[in-house]
Length: 95
Image (cartoon, rainbow, N blue to C red; front, side, top):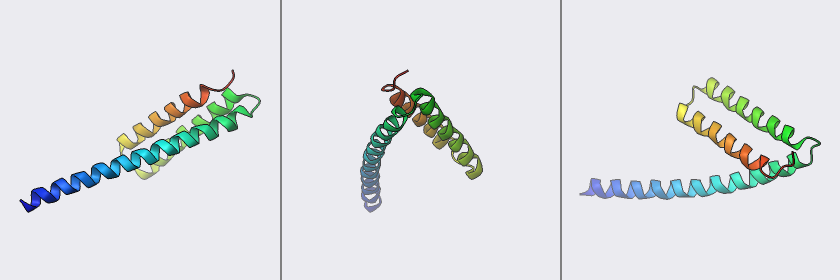
């Protein structure tokens, strides 16, 4: 019975930790997106600036994950997140 209780407590702790990290990730993403929107909007070609930012991010992810032999799931999620940021950043920029 003790092992079951420990497992349940561990799962509850992990769920709480995942929820906290998700909240931190959300706040970080929102702040980052707003900063990047502000930076890109000041450029003469805001869409081009946004493209350069996200292309550099993709290249950095590719380089990091290759050199660290990272989990493919992490790499896929990181690239998906870059796409989400790109969509959000571009949504407020003039053409």
